[in-house]
Image (spheres, rainbow, N blue to C red):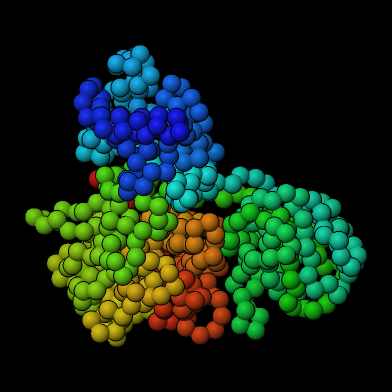
Length: 544
């Protein structure tokens, strides 16, 4: 009972404090941590101050569950953007009226306090604090009110090729030859339908390779698992076997390397041979894996500070993993986006779901993508041979085009414009699943295809890490766009547009592209779309 009274009294005092030096900062800090932004009390004084209540100094250990010290950016102990270094009262020697127990802060997190150490009074991040948000939104474990902070900082894996630790016991005699580090010793078996390799520990890998001595093609399916009980397809490949995508190895002597399509913790890798059913003796020599991958907001995302797009003064911690829902029409609020000034008019950041007339000239002239066009050049992205004024852009100044696809007048089509015009009456057929719940609800928009926080695939094209059910990769690899390199061959590792000759999306199975297959949209075409074009250099937009 005593603890309850102390906690209640402490919360009443701290939440009610409205005067004194730095009181706004100090009060806001406790409002968020004790009362929450919805008034649902989840923490008490004892979470931070220990069982001694307010008589004990808070411990940084209390910050760890929410602020995530274990990710790429230490959200607790980092001296610049860590929560502990920026807590109210840090560095403040004033003791107030409580003998040092309640250090009324000159520094705090409040955007309403001129003494804030993180935010300016208008809610923008102070210089040097640009990584504040990523302390939670990285690959560490940040969980607030039962909801994990989505990883927008991405993932970086660094490592060289290595052999697995072992081959899982089976009837396949001589399989260990494939991990002995010797490409002169190969498989003595011919009838194995699959091989299972043990990495030794559970970890994330990004690439696999198989050394072959073959004069014919072999098609393989690749799976990953942590326990050998549940298997997940981790590589689809570009070749097909009875309308199923598969990894093609051979026909050649040497290494067949490929980047995986799913990056997730696994311990076991399984190769399932589709064709031929009987392998040639000594045709397989060595199998290796690699962890070498880097993507995310600061790597291949927008790289500008979060407050360029997000309004930090919007409700943030609401206990809902994905606040935006199409039926609530709350895209701007759900993603905490800033309204945009367009001329004399203030408009929402994005119109999602899109319900206005989207065909004809409307994508060029409406404000459905106002936030994107704060930086990006509307005229180059949406201009073509038929545009008026600055919308006349020919040759096209977008790389999303197929130089082999021309209209009746012989002009190359601007695929950005064509997709944003939608289909159906007024271009409003709901083909895009904008809230990622499996049901199409909007005509296309920029964020239908682009993950502005960076993606394993080029051009920030969606791969499913952020749209998957939280804590899973169930929507990876989405439409899995990859660049083509020299010779028009798909290169999953290619990221530089100026080195590309075109691109291709993933084939899953026959028929039209559907949300069930690509987790994005109902396509006008099949899953696999391939285009060829000579790239044009497009200057990066100025940072606002």
